[in-house]
Structure formats: structure tokens, C-alpha cells
Amino acid sequence: MKKLSLDFWALDESKSFLRFTQNNIILTLLISVGYFIWFGQVIAYRPEHSVLYFLLLFLFYCNSITRSFMKAMFPFVIFWVVYDSLRIIPNYTINPIHIQQPYLLEKFLFGVNDNGVRITLNEYFTKYHTTFLDLLSGLFYINWVPVPLLFGIYVFLKDKTIMYSFAYCFLFVNLIGFCVYYIYPAAPPWYVAEYGFTEHFNIMGNVGNLKYFDALVGSPIFKGIYEKNANVFAAMPSLHSAYPLIVLYFAIQKKMGKFIIFFVVFCLGIWGSAVYSNHHYVIDVLAGISCAVLGITLFNVFVRKPMIKYILPL
Image (cartoon, helix red, strand yellow):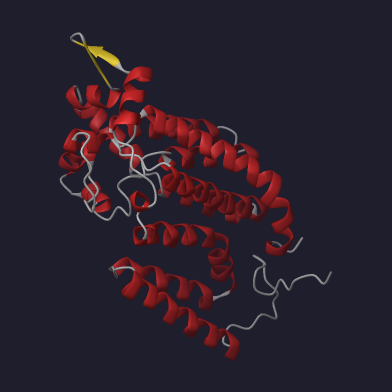
């Protein structure tokens, strides 16, 4: 079988690659039109849509290094576009939402006694939150994207094979998680605190206990993030809990030595913050960890080996 051309997809492209060819310009225009129709007519336009567009345009046409970086990070772009597009068909229109079931299961498995009453850990931390933990949980949670992205930049500079595997595995795990969102729509703990077990649709995301972090730093950082949440009923699995585990796995693959300790602490911090912030139950965190393990395993067995030869010039 004839080998596919690597002129475009290779991270380290051929020196003969030309940027401003007629085909590239036409393709750019077509993609641009499609992009802004999608984020304007189908999805409500937001300023960050333009920021992403012009950033990608700059990276592609600037030089071979930026173009190589764009290709390496492109799975993160796909993830963002897919996640942002979930709002078109909310998962609660596909399957019934689960509000009471995960709450009762959480209380049964991981509940604690407070003055003779069994409550969830989320309810306990909401009642007995401290300034130190408010700040610490916010610092961990705000880095759920920056740390994976910085790790991606590092391995891009050091080992593009690891970069490819990391980026596409990240996307693969997210796609698995998105499927579970639609199979089992689940309400987060803050929803039960706000609305009980009554169904309310078309509501905005909630900052949960991260409001205390916003108050401490004097800026509505998390409020601004969660008001743009694409799907309220997507608590299980906690993909926030999956991401640091993916980073840890590839840090071990890269043999990063003492830095692995940092990624272990980052994992534990994100997992604890997910519960403390009232955004996820412990069972959501465990589901996120399971999603990461399953995704990494399936990726290595079925995805990485057949595809890598078309991405990297081996």
C-alpha cells in the first residue's frame, strides 16, 4: 500500500514545504468560513473563538517551528471545540439525568458522621471549610489545564514521539469521558446543594466552593469559567481527575526523575480539590481515574501503533 504523504502531518516537516501556496490559502479560507459559521450560527459566538482562530492562523503561517508546534498541540484544539460543542445536544436530552442516585451512593460509600447525621464529604467540607484549604484547592484546580499544556510544551521540545502520544491520548480519554456523559448524565454535588433532587434544565454552571477562592484573591476567576460551562450534568466521570493521571503516566514514560513527585502531588491535589470544591463526588473522581486508565490502555493497544507512522516521520 502506498505510504501517505507526510508533508503536512509530520511534526518535523520537509524543508520544501511551502506556506503560501494556492491550495493552502484556499483550504485556509474554507476552514475559516466553516469555523465562523459553526461558532456564530450554530454555537453562540464568544471572543475566545476568535482568539483561538487567529492563534492557529499565526502558528501555521509563521514558520516551521510554530507550525510543528501547532500540529503537535492540535488534539487539544479538537478537545476544546468538541467540548464547547456539547451544548448543541445536551446530554439530558438523550438520557435521564441522575441526581439522587449518585448522591445516595456517595453517602453510603464515603459518607461521614456529623453530629449523628451521615453526610457526604462535599457537605462536610462545605460546612467546615478553612481559608488555607480554600486557597490550596483553588490553586490546584486552576492549574488543571496549564500543567498539562506546559507538560506538552516541554515534551514537544524534548521528545516529539512522547508529545504525539500524550496529546492524542489526552484527546482519546476525553472522547471516552464525553461518551459516558451521554450514557449517564449526573448532577454534581453543588447542584444538590442548590436545587435538591428536583430537575432544572437550562441553568448556568455554578462556581461551588471555589467561590471562597475567588473571594480570597478578589477576582471572579472561577465564576467566569463556570458560567460558560457547556454541560451542567457532566459530573461523572471527573475528567479533571483524569488529566493529571495522564500527565503522570507520560512523565514516567519520559523518565523525568524528581519531577514525577511533583506530578504525583498534582494528582492528589486535583483529586482532593474536586471533592473539596463541591464539584465532584469521590465516586466521580474514581470514575475519572478509571477513565484515564482505560483510555491510556486502549490508546496504547489500538490507537498509537497504527497511527504514529502517519504523524511522525519515522
